[in-house]
Amino acid sequence: MKPFDTDPRLPVMQEADLKGKIVLLRVDHNVVKKGKLKDPYRVDATIGTLFSIIDKGGRPILMTHVGRPRDKKSGKITIDPSTSIKPVADYLERKLNIRVAQPDIPVEGETGLSGLGPSVAAAIEDLRAGRVSMVYLPNTRWFEGEEKKGEVREAFAKELAKIADLYINDAFGSWQAHASTVDVTRHLPSYAGMLMQKELVSLNQVMTPEKPFVGVVAGSKYDTKIGPVSSLYKKADHLILGGVLYNTYLCAKYGIQVKGVEPSDVALAEELVALDKEKGEIVEFPYVIEADTLDQRIEGQYRKRDVRRFKKGDSFRYFLDIHPDSFDQPEIRKIMLSASTIFLNAVMGFRPNFYEGSEAFYRIVCENKKAHKYFGGGDTLQEFKALNPGLYLKALEDENTYFFTGGGAVLKAIEEGSPYELDSVKALLDNKKTR
Image (cartoon, rainbow, N blue to C red; front, side, top):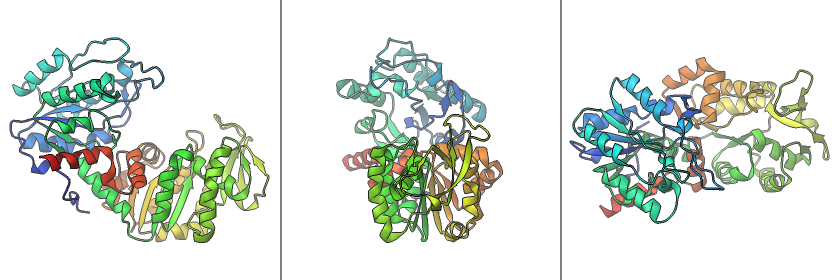
């Protein structure tokens, strides 16, 4: 893999003169849950960019979003430690043995922060004077201008631009068009960071895979995954569905009812079933686990079901996992072990009570030593690490395995048909055109 073999239209940070410059760096360090750092993988993935900025004489100001402090219905923004960047900044201080300034921003009510405030200016002065190694701005979603439309957002983008000499986006996972990912590029010379470049190159390899290609996607709602599923179906030699997506497919194909599967989603899935009658790309796991309850695992209240025995009109409780026996079937093993490229953004079971299907699935993926394997971010990464820690550690060192930092961004790009169609990436391309 050539780590920086990106589209020549993309402005990359290697082209920028950073000596003595203040660099506004957008990262995706959305790894805080209830005020604690849940996993440093996404933070560690950006350290190469940080070192490169400092090595070239730049002084970084970091910013990320954390969680969803804004209520979509009321617009109220809640500012509290549960969505603070403090655990990330503290982690960087310990890991890199540096001083990270964290400006103290006073709470201004329920609409969020109106601007950066004087404490940010003081922190930047410390940065220029070398008293701190970097500044970490508060959660970008604490500011009312981050997601809000109109003049408030434009004012926030301009305020961010005023504190720096140039902008680097290393936040592949933060693909949404917000002030800190898109609007700021209209006011500063802007470049892609090292991680962003690696993510785009790896994603392009998913979009133009070495065959045979096995695509794997799961989700809790079929209607939200129609785009990625349709795009993957066109590219893949074999498509594997997990979670509610697979349940919905089974309902549409066999005319059965499964608790938790919406009739409207089944109607949408019927199109995929009809298409697959001709192509036969969808991999059908023969065994699923049916459970009587959704939120508990009670002995005697869950069972193995054979998909091949389903009859039209059958009604079932919740399907909460693929039974591990499915992965011992010769036809399944042949598909998985003969693949040259495997992309998976999926958890097979309903966590945490049902996990054996995911565990068995990750095992067979890793059994294929020759395939290029691409893991989507988020739950896929967390589950693989928790269920198969030994295989996960080996995969981190495997040159044929890549872990994306943003699963949603990957699926969005697959749906769009190109990694360069994400709004945050298009903003960088547009910036280069105007320079």
